[in-house]
Length: 294
Image 1 (cartoon, rainbow, N blue to C red):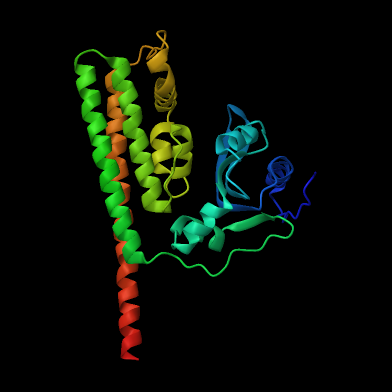
Image 2: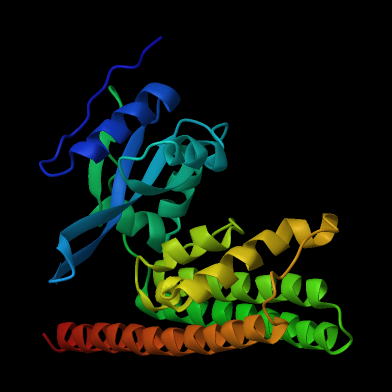
């Protein structure tokens, strides 16, 4: 049975409208929200080449389903077959969303409250009656979460250094993957209040781009770093099982430097975010004080 479609079409988003319709026909979701959009422009004017203008858009979607039977990786693979636009999607069952909103979960509250509703299934109701998390509690959770992730990342990095010292380069690279993974997961929780489960480094870096381009640029800003990232991504599966896996003539210490500097960057970004959240906490205190005086 083909579901009835209520798609909110938006001008200048024709490609995304096509993708939304395909998602609806294939997976019959309850709601689809857009929570971020990034536009990258490349404009080149030179006497040595023709005028070149290129624009790439990256869309971030939350798709809410009736149950939890729809696998996120399956949906992402479905989207990756489209060359119309780059789309990063989060798939979640409605029960999980409602439970999070009931406990003032910041991620779903912000996506649903401030995001753009692209699709609503016929007969489904909008989410209401929820509130954003208490800033003080959010700050406390973010600090605790980051400290745990940073501790794990440092532990993996120390183990990677030991492996490299005895010549176990494949093991070292595998552990450096875990360092990067922990740092990305920590960043995403601190900025988005979202506990991500994916271990795909490219996907994690795209998610980080929702709040800062610096993690993305760190690994994908140069051709060399992008090549190192691709090898590190392959190491997660191939280094364990494939005897032919290779670092492709790159020094293991180049990977180490790249990951160590990323961990420092992640810590800097989190500290900056904590200061922003502290300002919000202080503002709430001032407002409460003014209310009492009234």
